[in-house]
Image (tube, rainbow, N blue to C red; front, side, top):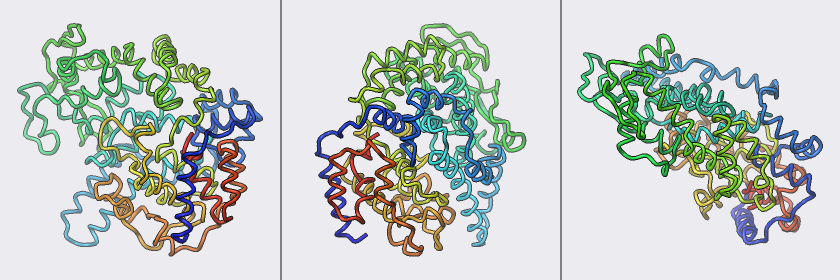
Length: 534
């Protein structure tokens, strides 16, 4: 698109931002649009009619039982072809270890093999997430993976975690997204990705001296409080959960010895190990209770207490309500959800039922109250476009350009899901650029480019989590100049796109789009503030 045309789109989008709130469509369609934007990553063609016909409650019930919704055959085939995500954590770590050894070889071929191998691991991990988010009928499951991964965030760019992220999401997050909070808490606590990311694998009792070993185990000297702090502050009780710094230290002591052995991981896929020699054998005083020496059971008891604590119920309920309803959710809703959390012993599905059955969730005032994160925006645009996604690089690259590289949040608190974190003029401009390229058929989603483009070049940041590993493996797709290498893809049909989005687009926006030049209409729909809300 020429600069002049792009400017028209930008100006139009900025004007939309000051227009009145969207007009409400018919009640049943309004509800269908609402649940598809909240329980799913937005509608695909035909989804609004399907949900309207089956009924919103039936749709919600079906999404709460994802195992009953089979994957399409094509999606199953794509996922089965990704060998990195289907192998054990130990196998992928062993591959990463071998690839890193090759860096000592000055031969250029060895360096290229290393880059390609590292890139393949990162690429396949990203492919699995994006393909499911776009094409899985289990949309609520994918939405909850997004939610819980950020809640229990692990940064892919830290050392061995590049090889562990796929297993972490597959084994510690996905099985529990609508199940037991305590089970997920334990699974994340014991996974080597979390043990490594927050350094608990190094934490030992004071005075511990490691044996004559090389590698990470040799670094294990002294207490490390990183995981214990985030376990209470982020994963369970919350920053105002009533604990003290002394409680953080005592919990860290209780979790000494919770580690993994990389050789055992690579040899037998032993992902967790309790090392009694590293454990602090003393009595602890934690959250007002005396904790006698019980070895690994001290940590298990701590997870039991934290998972059942009223502060955890409120913290988790607040975050869920903030994600699904409003940036500042109604306190009465949070309290109802917290009660369900406690009554059900942390059953996430029960808490979600309380949330989705609430008047606050379905209230018209709640619609349009959530601004899409870059991840939600990109995935929802791909779904609405119905474009076949063979090459995920344009989508992943855009997430990076928008400040949300996949698996790339370096801090333990994960990515925010509130408007103030993502709404700014530069971000709007970048979103509209992506919308323009997608609508104009200028993103190579259906094929790979002829020339590799380093993703760090696309993201504009050499520190991106994805940048180094994907160079030469994931093919980037900025709207220019790389796309010139491809045969033009069909531009999106604005009428079909408008039908797909239905009542998500206001009548005022539709009138503005209709009065614009035909080649700009699809881009203006995807670049409108209406579409950027969910």
